[in-house]
Image (cartoon, rainbow, N blue to C red):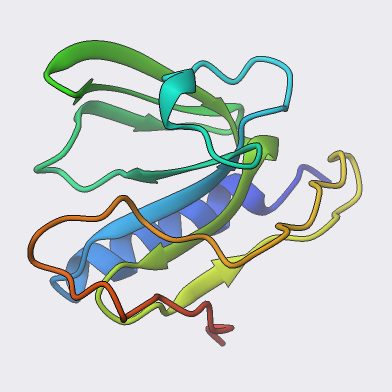
Amino acid sequence: MTPSRPYLIRALNDWILDNQSTPYIVVDAGVQGVDVPREYVSEGQIVLNISVTAVQNLLIDNDAISFSARFGGVPMQVYVPVVAVMAIYAKETGQGMSFGHEPGAPQPEPPSSPPTPPSDSKTPKSSRPSLKVVK
């Protein structure tokens, strides 16, 4: 069987958007093939906003997530192999899913601390998203 991760990422992205929330993905930047702005990588991970207002030409296929976005005003093409996605969650509620090992996919390294999205002026600094299992 093919890995379920890309299907779950697509479904959760749709669910998060349908609930008027902002989808964020946590990426293991050390996985081969990951092309992200390295200056935003912290402890081997990067948190990316993949909402329709933050990215252009978002494509989530069975192999990778790709899109165009601006980082610090500089346009960049981002490429993330699906096996590098460690979690997807809603910024506003923290609800989403983290991924473990599945047959045919390499095991991602567990995060050393809970991921936090890039700070912005609308989010209080004391609130952190928490990942919850969605059934």
